[in-house]
Length: 412
Image (cartoon, rainbow, N blue to C red; front, side, top):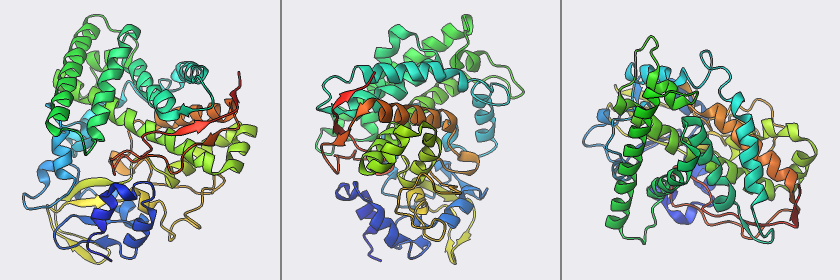
């Protein structure tokens, strides 16, 4: 194995197809070049670590001497807010996640996601109706990007008249996760900082309004909730709302776009989906295995020395868990480089696992199912205009920046 394989994974030239690099990594369960992070690339080892309480997600447990090429990027994107529960360990993580889940899912809010089906369907239909000239569509800009952020607005209870402002802030923060290497860094940092401040001030005002006049939306219930864990502070609420916006938006954009790209590369599957809409449920699960929107989890840290695959990883080290590599581990999945929506037993790592498994998974699944089934049904003879498409810079949140397609028309 070459010493520069991590640099190759981060190299934009390999963004369109990092899977040969992952195959190289899997020749040993643990890769360490003596200086950088310990990289885990095989399915069973990753899954075990995701359930291991000795592994921390809190960057404060990272040793000062640990080297991580993504650390500077993470620090640059950090907001002036306390860490979200995504970056905390128990018991703080568990308390905040329980509080956030009360208005989001079972057992306290069992109908929250199912009750959003009407909004999902109307937003998807409206976006497809307004795709315009069918001879050249940018599916990212015209569909996969605006769809999830609109849903986050509806989930949080952002007034319809403010959704356009929310979209602008979301676009700016998304750009900070996917920086243009040729752009002026100081200007980008200023723009990102301003957007974070404006979004924070807006959310703080909305939280106060919801405390005075609560509705049925999730932000109202978080702002006024008084469960066994008490109430969230304003700063915790701001941090949680920002997490729902950024994490919920970015992953779903990639899931939908990667999904349509995969379908267009597999026209027989696209035809089967059009003829059998129920296929979309297992299809999205296979998609989460085959082209996961989150490729790797960086900056995991062992709280004690641990052994993985015969290698001792010292306390405080930086670790990367390459989810996308584990998803194509031939020890776990037969013929792993083939997209097969009929595959049985798809226990993928696409939404993580353990206590940090994707909080918004039920909504992300439903968004992807709704989007892909409707695109398959309504686009007549869709085809790629560019393959591979241009990808985003980000190696962690991997997906096309644009997906230019053409079709013969749009069905009603």
